[in-house]
Amino acid sequence: MKKNKEEQNTIKNIVFDFGDIFVDLDKPASMRLILEKQPDFILTEEIIKINNDYEKGLITTEAFTNSYQKLIPNIDSNTLQEIWNAIILKIPPHRLDFIEDLSSKKKYRLLLLSNTNELHIQQVIKNNSLENYNRFKKCFDKFYLSHEINLRKPNSNIFEFVLNDNNIIAEETLFIDDTLEHIETAKQLGFHTWNLIPGKEDITELFEKEFPFPQ
Image (cartoon, rainbow, N blue to C red; front, top):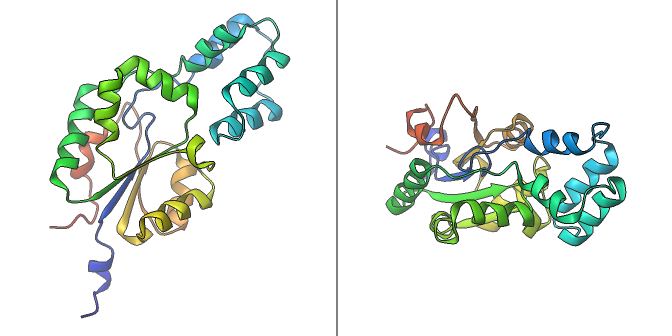
């Protein structure tokens, strides 16, 4: 029997961002700290490319820090890494409880899709413990980090990769992210979307939202 449009659009899969969805971030921290060391620092196109290449795993951590040191020679490698990681805070217990509970029900395919890099993941583990990180990670059917798959949001190819890798369709998938640019790409591909606003909304409120979840 052919499914009607409403049945086809029922959410079966949920794709979550990581930063400011589960793990709290202090987004201005790194820039704030670097300006304390070098007040004339400017985020140039060259630096943005270095950041993006590192986030996509196209350069190593060593090459990443070396690139920064050429631009900011008065900051040593360890200090640079501390500044870079200052953005990363903790995963609040209520969010870990939420995703563990959702995972245990096995009602949806749960995927994580994050623009992140090797240093930031190391800091997540340091801040939250390896045990809690592993508890979190095992809640997901697939756990996609940009530096491991060499793709990053908001490019459409990362969303297409996730759909193809899981043999799912966008119309049955909810994508949750705090960055509007990422949401816009997902919308264009047919995903249901939630542009979560950190500080005003919390991922634990997911099922209070009006999405076409199965009854």
